[in-house]
Structures are given as structure tokens and as C-alpha cells.
Amino acid sequence: MAGTAENTEGPAVGTGGEPESSDSLRTFGAFLQALREHAGYSREEFGSIVRFSKHTVASVEQGRRIPDAEFVERAEAALGNTGALRRAVRHIARRPGLASWFRHWARLETTAITLETYECRVVPGLLQTEAYAREVSLSVPPIPDAAELEARVGARLDRQTLLSTERHPPSAFSFIVEEAVLVRHTGGEEITRELLDHLLGVKRRHWNVEIQIMPLRQPNHPGLDGPLQLLETPTHRWFGYSEGQENGRLISDPKSISILQQRYAKLRSQALTPADSRDLLERLRGAL
Image (cartoon, rainbow, N blue to C red; front, side, top):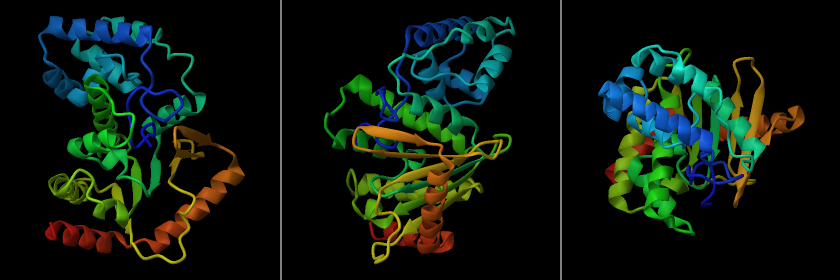
């Protein structure tokens, strides 16, 4: 599990993590950092101007994240509109060894209008707190060193900008999480308490996010084959993604997508309603 999309956002080949850094990514990042520092902005100040988190800015500058078109355009406007960043971004290349299925999924995820996630191992990365993300990364061997840990956690937090209701248009998110994931108390009671508060807060802050909890007792369970994700593109095409130990798979075959959609529909019908899920989260939080 250390190499999965929800468990490690660090640089890993073929595992659903952040794209591996390449010379061109690092060069673009260094160029952006030089322009930002010349303009006199801290990462936090620059992030506020371009409306991306400071973690996203750091990931781009450190060559860990491929900047999307919106980031480049906003950065250009903030740094003088010289056209230098627009020209430079054309030369970014990923390392050839990065699995093609993840390159495609990562690109699709940034523009998807619908994202559906069923998770039975950990709280999905888009919903994790920083402390929980650290504990997940430190729980599964091999244990990362300090630099890799920071890269994983930073990338995890970067992805959470996808939840923003300020995106045009905002994406619709559906999450189904097993109750067992929450009562496991990964990292201990304090981290779990913060996580439950965060989940309740996400629902209050994001009208585009629906969270459902699958109860512990479910004799007829359609998710026994493991976690799954589905997304819808702006052209209304659907893709799926599944992963296991040290591997992941992008799914585009219409028949396979139909099967995953059937499973997700049944999971959604069997999980607690969003209102009942909120009540359960509040009870779990109150018990800590």
C-alpha cells in the first residue's frame, strides 16, 4: 500500500503517486522560483495571488508537480506577462519510465467534472489531514526518509485544491468510505479526532462534496474486490482507476467502466445517506 495513490503521493513509478521529477520539471521550477523571488513574493504570498496553495507552488518549484495551464497563466500575470513561463512550460517532459496509465489519470483528474471514490483501506487522499497523511506514509514499509515524507504529504495536500468550489465549473465529488477505516484510529486518538473534525468541515465548506460511510455490518457487499475510482471528463467520457499492492490501472474499456459503475451504484445505495453519515461522524467524534 505504500505506493498507492491514496497512500503515497511521492515520486513512484507505476504506482499512482506524484509524477517523477525530470530535468525539465526541475528547470521550470527553478525558473519559476527565481522569477517569484525577484518579484519579492514569498511562496505563501505568491500562492494567494495565483489562487493556488503554497504547497502547490512548492511542488511546482521543486519539480514534483506538472503545472496546469491555469497555474501558468496566473503566474504569468503575476510576474509581468513576459511570456517566458508560457514558452518554458512547452519543454516540460515527464521521465519516460513513468507508467502511461498514471500520466493519463493525473491529467484527467485535474479537469474531471465528476469524481467518485470508494475506499476500504484509508481515508481518500483528497480528504486527509496533514497529520493523517504523515501517519499513513509512516505506517507502511518501506518507511520514507524525511525529504520523501515531505514530498508525499505536500503532494497529498496539493491535490485537495481539486475540491474547491471556485473552480469553473466546480467538480462534483462522491466519496464512500468504510466505517472500519475511521474506527481503526490510524495515528491515535488525537489524529483521528482532527480527521473527523476535518471530514465534517469539508462537508460544511464544500457543497460539491458528498461523503457516505459504509457501515461495519454489510452481509452483501459489492466492494469486496477493493477500492475503485471513476471520473467523468468535460466531454462526458468515463474512466476508471483501480490499484493494489505496488500497482495501479487506468480503465477505459466501456464494458469494464459499466461494471465499475454498477458496483459503485450498489455501494452508494448500501452506504449510509449523507445525513446519516454526518451523524455517524459526529458520534465517532463525540466518543473520542
